[in-house]
Length: 325
Image (cartoon, rainbow, N blue to C red; front, side):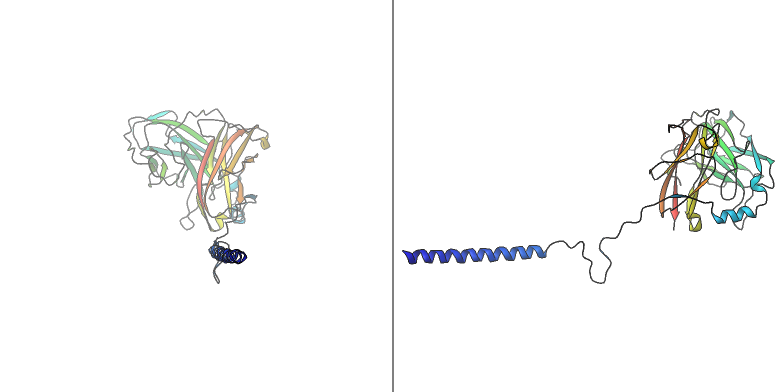
């Protein structure tokens, strides 16, 4: 009986050892198949690339390049150019999809006059804005400027003089605005509104592809010319090389003063939906620290408590820009 029990125990111990060895081998094999996401192959870069550094924007000084350009402009930047919109006339009705724009520049010019230097492709110019779309630069006011394929309905035209680096003059009389109506103009809704040279200045149809994502259907909006109005000017388009180091935010104010100028309004801006910041004196600012890529810039007019001051939807504007580095 004792020998029988001893034999049974021996068989049991052999079976247990076999199971233990099998389990140990299984665990070793399983561990050998574990993911190696944190181990880099010999001689190669890490498998997981580091995230790009976060964008850290900061208000910067006026760029030296602009200061140098100002130094060579004589008294122009202390001038006070004024604009008169000759055509289209205020509250006029145009029975054509082609609308002629005619402007007159006067005032204390101190040498200021719109003109593009063909070598640098820069120069003084007028910012022409149809409805709340990105502006078109008008360099030669002695030459025709037309809006083509303008849709039927009420539209708003805004103009103001600018320097070669797109900083606006902010003196009294520099900004002008008119409303006009196109009736039975015969525009083609499948095409955008362009200037005489073919540049897109507005969009008659939300389904149309445009060079600016924010260019929605272009209408005048219920704008009140006696209420506070912020007109977005810059930034716009593409920035590269040294232009991308510090990018200017600039705008025009009508019927409003900012708190730093003794008024009750503030200009609020944000980039890529980030933390809102404020401009309390009516002057351009430059922001440095931009990363390469596409960015959205939102600019708004708000009261002292941070509430949006509405005026036909024009006091809150977002533009898309591209930074190339």
